[in-house]
Length: 275
Image 1 (tube, one colour):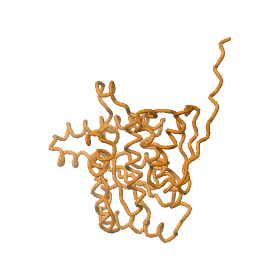
Image 2 (tube, rainbow, N blue to C red):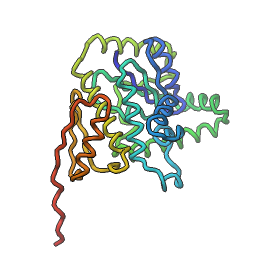
Image 3 (cartoon, rainbow, N blue to C red):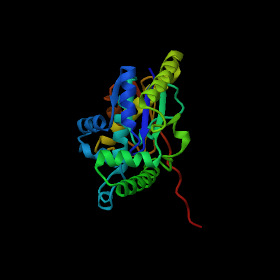
Image 4 (cartoon, helix red, strand yellow):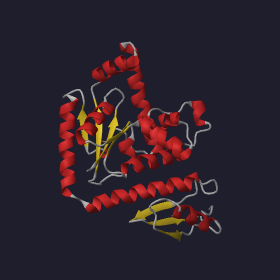
């Protein structure tokens, strides 16, 4: 089946929609709790760190020590590892933004709702008064837009091009919306786009390789571009001079699913001479 990635506005009931769809498709539902637990298991992260990627912008004092690039790389690898199982509905505030565009096997959905309906949801779920709930929503929306643009090189959380479909969860019952999404998933699966399925698998493996390189204490943030094709991995970098080149190759070979790896050393750009 196609993988469904649901991005949810706060208070738009995206996780409820994901649960209804997963039950209808008889597949696994992956939400923020599952992703946080997997990130903690694989990378030794505090489970609450997921909030700094998927739920809120870090506070001033958190920014002093936060390695946002590392954190984003880890959580993107976790998300794509779940996506690689194919039989899954995955839900998070910014999940569709993390995933590759233009792949028919991946259905990227945004769950939205009018402010009034979202206020009522937040009042019910968080025990807030109407005014406090509205302020929380408006602040959260602004905060997440700014944070996604920072993390993802200017990508717009509200950009329609990020999503294949936007659904208003207050306009129709979730059962009806999940039924419509399930029909789309079945149509996508029936098309059997093997090239798209392979492209998704390549993106998943490249994300695991990038996370493995980032996690190594002697490689970390080194500028390395990673490409994957049917288990073959290509690294491009001007930073991997000996002996770091062999170290990087060794790290990549240990990633599950890698059948071969090559390194392309790029010449660094010449220094800019002052006039």
